[in-house]
Amino acid sequence: MLAKPSFLKPHSMPATTSNGSWEAGLLFRVKSQKEHGWFLDIVPAEANTKDYIYPVNLPLRSNGNQTLGPGFGETVKSSLAHPHEMNFLLSRSDYDRISDLVGNVLRSYQTKDPDKALSDYTNAVDRAKKGSLRVAIFVLQD
Image (cartoon, rainbow, N blue to C red):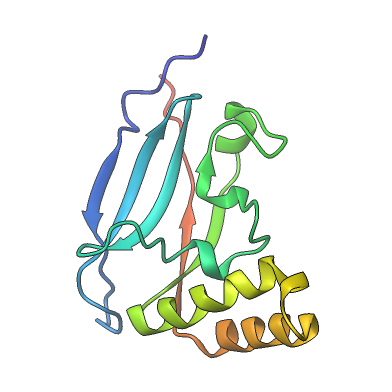
């Protein structure tokens, strides 16, 4: 059984940028998972169930970039051996608009025009103000 490294603990910190170009009150979180892994998200402090990373990273059903650990064909070691890169939304208005469109894409068979559902989603993602996140784990050895 692998022990969880003590340096990577569940944590939440205010998300900030040098140019102040995005919504105040966003938190970057690292949450421990049951199976020796961690889940990353960026959420608004007042609505911490709204993941600003998920709606703008493909594939929508199973985006493995937010997981540091086993899954999506990787072991803990292989997952931590490479950087995880993802985009995230910078505003609640973009989140609300794109989240509504995600459902249409995932259930396109229930829409009148499945191709339009996808193009509406991709156009909204292209127009949204986004930031990018790159997480890399460095192991210090004696």
